[in-house]
Length: 409
Image 1 (cartoon, rainbow, N blue to C red):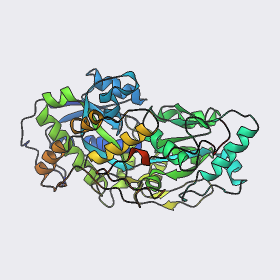
Image 2 (cartoon, helix red, strand yellow; image 1 turned 135 degrees about the vertical axis):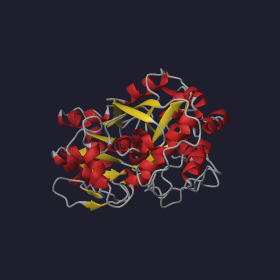
Image 3 (cartoon, helix red, strand yellow; image 1 turned 90 degrees about the vertical axis):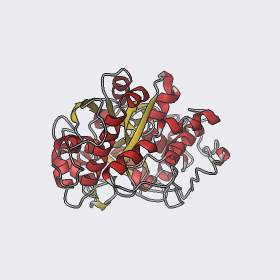
Image 4 (cartoon, one colour; image 1 turned 90 degrees about the horizontal axis):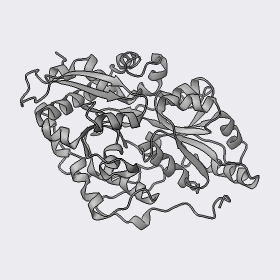
């Protein structure tokens, strides 16, 4: 029995006890890994096994076709899949967020050297670290060179939308001035080494691996770009949720408890050892430790930057599935022409983002829950000082880059 966990006797009927959950080898699969290894699932009467997948498409498809009971998913994935974006439709839902922050944008070392030679050198965590990149892109365009190719892990992923947001703030048009391609997280460093990419947005530990090998430098972390923005969720199909309501609440409760354990002082070192196991992330604990313990290195020759909130798994209401944050993702998809924003798309969020199930799980654990499904993101949340109020959405207040800012048009 774990000291943080609820009694092992379930308070509700468990329609299914033996579950298989999918995950992608990233630090933020930690709540699932810890749930298994530290007994939080067992404390809720569940027997959980995991399967490691190499891509988000594989995760989505296996959940959709019933090969997995649920999985670690990108926060945008249940939204896109339910709305049928990208040509694949399946009603999905989530009742818990697995963690906040966790990503970074890394640029190839050779590209960083070019940026440093401009009037606006790369300054990690600065107001806009992409300004120097914009200068480089202008010069490349004037010489008739091909656009830089940048990697994101999945179409309309949190990573792609964050990358677009960062680029656009410097006047770089993500649709014209660069080429954004999909690369699975475990292949990012290999693609950078092979010269297939000039940079990428990915979760840890793959930024740290690129830095350790001298292949890249971190331009900005997600924590700096959107402080305490959601990253992964536990996604299931809506049909599975309807058929297994008691099991679903128990699953959410176990993940909340795993998140609490992860954010307890002194537990991160053990978590790094767990994540290093081959069924989870499968790399040396030293690579995982950088981001997990809040001492993150942005370049091979740089001193570590103290970032205690690089990964947050429970603090700052991390596990709450805020509907307003899902709405922010929708506004960004609308900004880039990936989704229309009719009333029906916004209404669908009430079916996708199940704060009611989170409340049931929190009540089961004796934890408080928010009074409302929305959370105001103030001007300090986003690196560019923009404010997002879910009660007042102005789709005209989503500036696209100046079409004359760069010359590749």
